[in-house]
Length: 305
Image 1 (cartoon, helix red, strand yellow):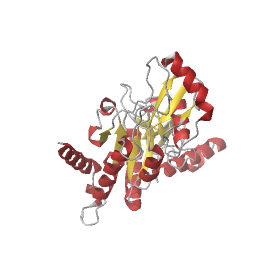
Image 2 (tube, rainbow, N blue to C red; image 1 turned 90 degrees about the horizontal axis):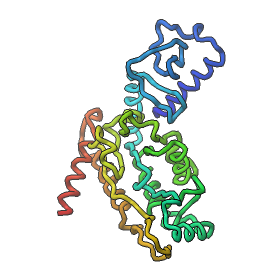
Image 3 (tube, helix red, strand yellow; image 1 turned 30 degrees about the horizontal axis):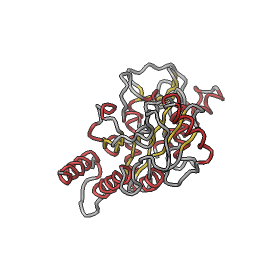
Image 4 (cartoon, rainbow, N blue to C red; image 1 turned 60 degrees about the horizontal axis):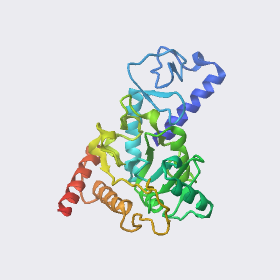
């Protein structure tokens, strides 16, 4: 896959850097500078100034690739996904897969209650009653009902990324909480520093081409350049700021079997089936998940009327 190619190139660059022997194996005049670290080519060591390079700092700090190289990576990943009969799924964190809140944003009664029972709460495989101080002693996180099952089922159809506007340390902590064994999101966690200067999320830094990507996010405005790839999620908000003592056993929560993630999973299954429908013969290079997603979204709108 494209991620493995980037890592292989990165490893080659590190070896060259240790040897300090750029000239013997790479001719600076013929090198097309596919991989960069800040302003230096990772292969030949020459200082390079491109008008545009794609930042991939979520894979390795200061790593960038040229626009031409990113195009090649997209093509490679496209063919790899088709071979595996998979698509790419980009997942938001907050209000989509979980809800986190700073303890000082809770009422004093709620804060005392939640922290008093924290150690007695066990991790449910479906995430219905999971809260954690994993990221910060001042932070509570509640996983959305069905999230464990959702990730397991979605991974059969999609290669998955996390993409949040939160800080990287928070994103990595939540990825560890959701995926402790690193089966789904290893080296595919994007955060605030991977957004554009105007605060937009961009598929330009995802190794899969946009024609293979579905996005789940509760915020439409975060994806102004990629609205056709987006399924807008119903916002998940578990914690309140009401000033009363909370009984966790009676707190309202989404249904495991009929909640938002269960509903969206069925939509994703439909998108995947239609995209790889063996009964329809289409040139693979002409396939585009955006067209399929539009059809599925329109059908869902008609059914809800």
